[in-house]
Length: 383
Image (cartoon, rainbow, N blue to C red; front, side):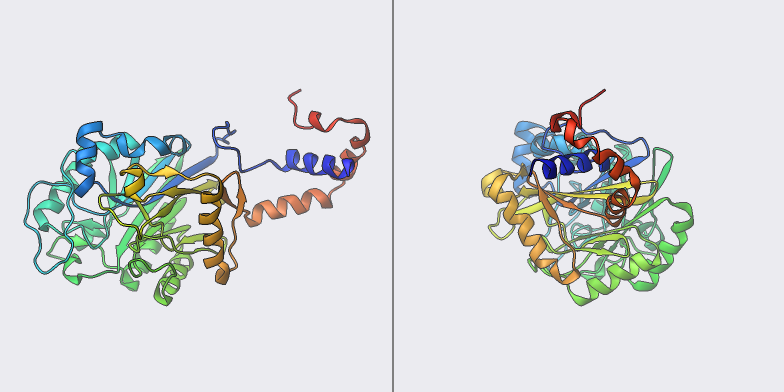
């Protein structure tokens, strides 16, 4: 038994440990880029009094430690930011945040927001124009909506550590009147011909391509057939990561052709109260030399009756329940998270190969000879 334990410790030190306890320091490779993706953001409605009372940093205090690990943070901005315009008629929910909401996005460190959703045009073209102008003023990049169809389909380019990341976003939700056209502002429609053409256009210019879709059905915990088909096609056309929004609840993760599809990330900070939108995740995706190297999920409590528009990282049995449920719904894709320190870790193919290679080489056999005379506590010690 003692020898078996030593072997496990030795292997762990040799191949590295990807999941660290919360609060511990992580050695970050200079050729790694970590992206943090969040769910739907709506900083209007009942969020407004909290922003005014406690300041723009209020919603993100509890997730700051995770955000600080990111090279880039991206989320779906689920409303215009404006005090102009008129609410569209015959729509049950019309959402809008006040202009100072952009300060909250800046304070949190958002570098890119996606605008392709069913609320971007709730208060018409004036409010959309104000949103674009404010994001430009605060140097927050955006994609998925614009002054006309070409502008809405325009990608967001970000340069990080000499790598080019490109973001595209599309809406597949009603009302269709919100879709941009050659002479009309609005959102980028998720028509297959648009998605395919846009991905193939940016692929030669990018090291990493991220595509966001606003799709599916609200409160539905499983992806629809068309989501699966289009998500996989986006990968086939050249996307490295697909992010989904709109259901307001978590949906499956799928590991497809060494790429990741997150069908819905649920809510993040959303200015309403509901007992049907309880949990969400922060999705951390690390790329190394342009390829996916690590996936980590951090479960969140987003029920605003409890957290008051300040998402809280879950621990213990509550965290495990969220992660186990994600594993359950993702079974049909044969995608599974290892649950380590209240986080979900996806063991990627590259890590599996690295581990297998270690055992196949003579290196392990040579080092095994040291086991008998080396205390287990010395394996990971600094020289």
